[in-house]
Length: 602
Image 1 (spheres, rainbow, N blue to C red):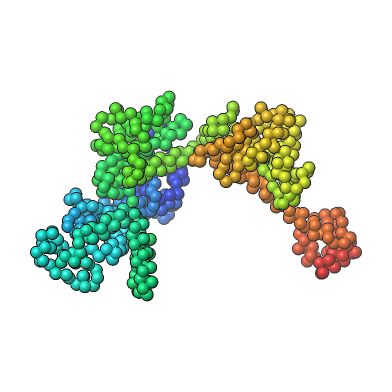
Image 2: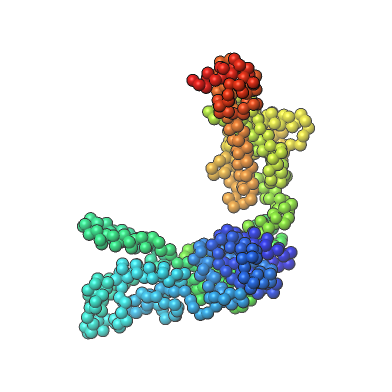
């Protein structure tokens, strides 16, 4: 939190994202009290504030905590693996489980002639290849079964050095006769053929399932074509198991070794740097800090400052290899090698850190909106001014949308936003009066002209920005009205097209695209969607009222005044249809009541 005013723990919990991950309760001294995993961080942590459900020990822990840290992951399995690693590294006081040396299972491909592929819980540096860890022993066992069923690897512990096989020391065992091994021990399978299967198994364990999937599919189809349906069903079962298998996570990979990972997400005047420390291929710590670049806006200098600040804060021995999104000022860090990954596990780790930096930024903005709404609004307004190239902040925005159904009952809506928020008391509906048929451009000209002619006549303040829902056609229609009224240079005007959210300016034939992750686009879409919602609601109400009136107008002898009286009394056509002759006569007289009864009885 740095020198910032500390946010109450409950509010920190409310700002957590609804993604899988690991959460940590931290006390005032910075000591991690508890580490837990969650499928949804916000929902899980919210349970800690319902004291009636908590044991006394956990209630005490929550009262001692002053900070909530979290690390987002891509899946619940990743969260489980990361929780295991962090508990073993941090040894939190309130974690009773997972503090021992028990680890998750791995799959090892032994470094030996005719390599065995087996289960292990120890990662040994003997040249063997290790894959995992797996959050469930069941997942690991299923995967081993698939591999042995596909490739018939040996499971014995015989020494299959070439000279031993050449001496004919071994004979095929029962597994060979059952079809579960090809007896390389007796020279029945060549090393080249066996190693080809091992290479496919390695690819599968790396998450490259395509070659194995194609091989199984071909075998299944061949067995079916030969009417060997039991064999085809077996291959189908293996395919199903393969589809249910997910490739391993970058949260733990023995091939990674020791690494430090830094990801940077920069905002207007603030940057968020997320750090992850990898020891022995496993994430053992993660931290995201907020830094103020100040006058220094060079990304390399900002990243260098973040690396220095975090390294001082986390302490410990820094890894020699550092994963970064781009190179910092390398001369400041002698003895450290910086890598900008393009693919593979290292890129996955960088994306993992970047995701946490983006979530920290979103959490900060959410807390800012809760605690300091005026400051949050100022930030959004400044961003919109910059993104839309405006001369002033768009504090007062108006947006127009047309609505009709095949040209019938054309209406329009105008919604007003103040400081990025709806000002619903200022919303306005319009009935289109001069346009016949489905002509959106003419409707836009009429409504915009009526709106701003009135504001000018009344001397009312004009908006800081006007948005029309549509592309160049609607924008040109509105701009023509602005020119006629003499306000084209006083009020900025843009069009926002649907689907890919293109922004059009009157003087530019090409569309402009706002940042997909930025707040300005979200505000613009909110304004456009609100105008559409408001217009559609009015149009539906108008169509419904028109249908009711047209139905009653078909009744002989019933005119507009009688229709108005009937609707005031009965509200709906269904109620009028069900009314008794006496009730109808009390409203419109006996003769019209009789005509109404005759009409509906037909």
